[in-house]
Every structure is written in C-alpha cells, then in structure tokens.
Length: 461
Image 1 (cartoon, rainbow, N blue to C red):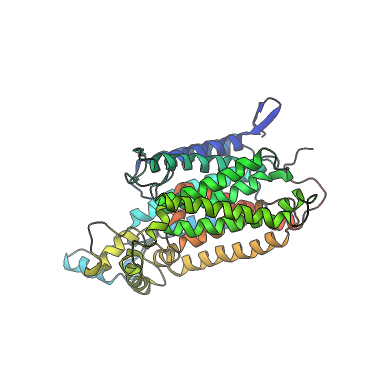
Image 2: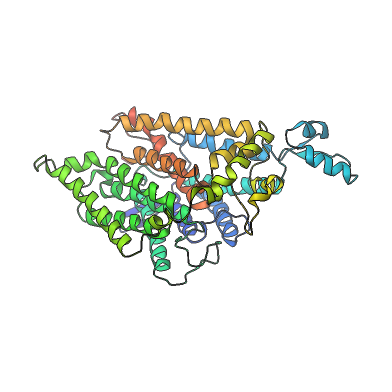
C-alpha cells in the first residue's frame, strides 16, 4: 500500500515521515545508554509505535540491499532472547563462572532451580528491549522509495547540526541540561550524556556534510559554503567537547570526507588548471588548522588540553583492562549475559580500583561483547565486521559510481568501530539508529556494482 503526502507537487512516503519522526525523538531523548533514564522510556515507546504504524500502514520493506543488516540485527536479538531461556540446574552449573553463585546458594540453603543463561537476566531483557530502536530504523530505511534515499543524509545532517547547536550553547557557559538523559552539568555533550559519543556524532557530521554537498551529482551551488561551514563547525565543536578520542575521530573524518568527494570536486574543477585542486585541498586543511590553533590560543580547545592532563596510568580504562581480560577468561566461551557487565565487574573488582563512581562499561565494546555474549557473540561480531570489510572493498572499488552512499556508510561504520575500541557508542539509541542507516547504505554496494539499465525496485517511472 502506498501511503504518502503531497507537498507542493512533491510526495513523501509514510516511511520517510516516520523516519524523520524517529530521528527527531532520538535527538531529543536518545543520547543516553543507561537503562533507568527517562529518555529510554520515551524512545522505546515511540519506536514501538512507529514500528507498528510502518507495518500496518507503510509500504512493504525491501530486503535486497538491507539483507545482511537484517541478518545481523535479528541474530543479535535472537542471542539475547536465547540467553533468557531457563536451563536445568545441572546444565547451568556447568557453565563457566557460575561457581561463586552456586556456593552462595548452597550457603543460604536454597535449592538449585532452573536459571537463565544470563547471570543478570534483567540486564539482558533491557538489552533485548533496546533493539527496538535499530530494528525500527531498519524497517523504515528498507521501506523508503528509491527517490527518498538521497534525502536521508540531509535529514541526518540536520540532526547533527541541531546537536552541535546544543553543544555550543553549553560551551558558552549556559546551563542547558536535558532531563531525559543523564548528562553532566558543565560538560559539552550536546544531546548526548557522554562527551565521547557526542564527539563521534560530530565526526559523523564531518562525513555527512561533504557528501550532502554533492548528493545526487549536483553542483555545489549554495550547498558548498553551507556544507564547508558545517564541517568546520563540527570539528571545532569536537575540540570544545573535551573528548580526546573524539579529536582523533574528527581528524579521521576530515580525511575520509575529503576522499569521499574527491572525484566530484575534480569534476567540478575540471575546467580549471590542474593545480587548483591541490591548492584548494591545502587551503581547506590550512583553514581547519588555523581555526584549531585559534581555539588553542583562546584556550577553547578542551580536547587538546585534556591530552596533557591525564596520564595513561591514571585512566580507568587502562587500569581496568587487566580485570576485564581476566573476566573474559572466567566466563568464556558462554559469556556472563548480555548487558551484565556492571554487575559482574563488581564481583571481580579489585580493591585498587575501588572509587566513589562505578565502572559501568568496559570502555572497549569489542571486549565487552566477548565477555557478555561469549563465543556466540564473538562469532556474530566477527561476521558483522567481516561483512563490513567485504562490502567496503566493493563500495570503494566502484569509485566511479554515481551513488556515494555505500562509501559514506562504509566510512561511518569505520568510525563507529574505531570508537568502540575506546568506548561504547553503539549502545546509545541515536547511534544505534545511525549505525543501522550506515549499514543499509553500505548494503547497496553490491547492488550498485551489478546495476543494470532496467528500473530499480520501487523506482517510479
């Protein structure tokens, strides 16, 4: 069923409208990963409503280019649900790492009963519930019309710019706290609770802006100065956020963004002498460096300042790493249960790591997946990264293709993977949805590589 609304001769499908609504709600309340924040209730409730509306009234999804993303997302959901299935006492007792719990039950005189695979089933239920957001985003992306796909980068870029505006207001000294997320007063984190996640979001904006300028093989026109200005703004916002990891991600994003639009820039400058392109690139790089130096001189580059404030030996991430590795050895190959890190870490936390605050995540999502989900999680993670690598090779080899979205998706997922080595960005609803969108774009790589002159599915003649 085709459901759309006409706006001055231009029609949008219900799926695209619902996707815009989802992005708006995620911008408002989807920047936190903790289960108890109010924003999670709002985001998940809205996601369920949008998903039901898309199923009942939207266009049927196309599983072609999004098939690998569907398989990975549904496999993750299935793994979380399987961990909630009760196991007989003799099987549960044979799982690695359950010894202390068995001793505690015996000491208290409790009988051994059927228990789920996950040691903290409530945390696993929360993790499974959180997947409604990426699954809704996937459903809506797979239901878009052919003509609506190129509009998604602009919509996503608008959300990134809106988050940057909040960050700039916070940086000005104004108290602007979001009651829907657990943000920290005085911290520049935009619409996120974590400054590192905010900085990654800005880095993704540095990828989106250049592609948006040339989206659909358009000449830059008015998009050129706006996109360039947004790119510089996003990078400066990263400097203001105080995120050290974000600073590296921002530099990577600038380099990848330039590579994404290298051919469109060359085509635009084809009527000019050859030396114009390298001079232009050098000028852009010099401009970014100049703005960064001005920020440092004005004592506004908090991210650079923090590089020299905290020694590696004092950083909780590096101090907690040996304990995390030991925990993986204890619970492998079955894992402790998806989402259980906080509780399990308290069982193994050495005296030297005790502090007033708690260590909520491993700050290395690769290791945390292996700890929580064991060998099945490791296999699923390896399959997802393997698919990303294979599809990325196809996307970047078809450099002459008119569609830049597969390469954009590849670059965005690369930044998320890199950020996951130092943090846990894909656990926030906003970045879950963005990761899904990037995956759908990347999934089009193989389809575009074997494209034919015949009309594509859902393409209106």
